[in-house]
Image (cartoon, rainbow, N blue to C red; front, top):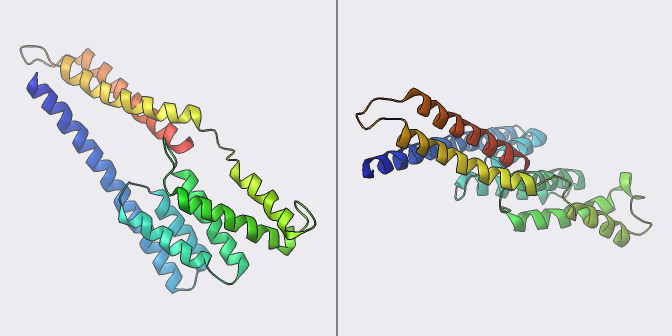
Length: 209
């Protein structure tokens, strides 16, 4: 039993390590793409790449904070259109990485406030929400505070997916081999099916939560 538990733990750690490595490599790559684009003064491409880097979220991963830092610098631009574009990228990245909690909640709140103000002052949208700037800003802030994406169900689905993934691995380890060491194909298939379902459910929940 102790050996089986060790197997389960080893498999879980290995899979999580591979997933984390994939996230870090992709995030660092997107960050570098953004830096290269900015060196060529392609601001739109740089912001898009940095948003992608921020979306490759992993707790404590340095590329995420670096991406938000770069986006914040662009968002401080004196050009309101550039600033608005960058603030929307910050908001989009923060919402995209929400799962059972909201990472970078402070950045999201600041982006919402900035977007509301910039949108209220945007001459192309000056009539939206009211005649004066303060009323328009409140109008935009109210709408930004409402997240249209469904999340309750998908959060539960993500948690269920993790449970099924781990349960499938445990099933395969505990029941996939007979006491004599002979692989039991049917039990292994069941365990693999549960684990695959769990991974799919987790990715679906993570993407939509």
